[in-house]
Image (tube, rainbow, N blue to C red; front, side, top):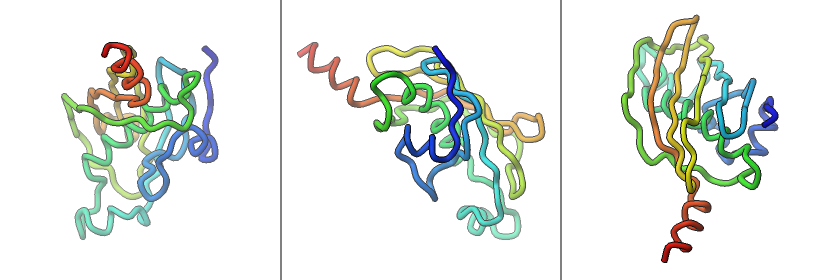
Length: 155
């Protein structure tokens, strides 16, 4: 399938997160049903730096996971018929945070959709700063409209 490159307007077209909860700035490459790669540039103005932690600002771990999830959700949302739908995080496992992400960093996000069946995706993602792994996780994403379609067929 053809790869896509999504700037901010493209992100708005395919997914429903909006600032301040949009945790990605752009997707350099989305291969629908396969993988997505992009980034988030961290600024002192990002809302969480003021409160996490004063005097030692860093991106909270769960927002790092959210950035991975939002990037990987694009692999599902860019598949035919899924544009603009909602994708939910169902589980996250094997979380690892190995480097603080601070104002001025550029978080490079790389994700893969390993399996996609009946509205359920098994995924993994990794965030890098300055070519060093900052975070990684395995997670499950769900597209409720498709999942519900399969569930009604089985009833």
